[in-house]
Image (cartoon, rainbow, N blue to C red):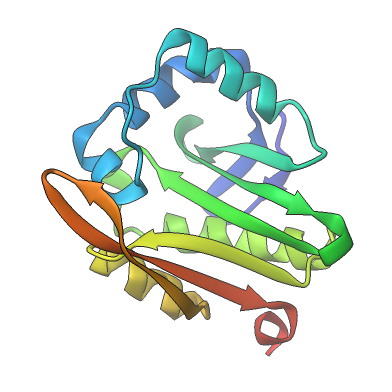
Length: 177
């Protein structure tokens, strides 16, 4: 148990090689792919490359989300495309265990990540891309304080349909309010 960040119901720890099988199940899940924008299947080689990327911290920092009550891995989160000269990064979070959806864990984890990003890593801006048809996701990010800043019109194709891809961001001063 290598707890790096800890909330009331979940903690975040660095990704370990043993987590890859669980990640593969989520990434290859049809429903999860439809809301995350993943298109291609995750292969063993792809998982290895992802793992290697999670071990570097120059342009990404990645964590596993663990339920504190039973030490079960329930998701993943991280910063990617970190660009320190501009004090900016993209944020990602996936709650892979669907029985945890709608239970407030995503909000708790997001708040841990925002606190870490703004208060420890000195970010000024965090961004996220949301599939436009993911209305629950859009409402979630707005409830956290993220603002819509751009639309990639019909920028996402899934299940024979195009959907907009919504770019959202949160600035440091908005977070501190």
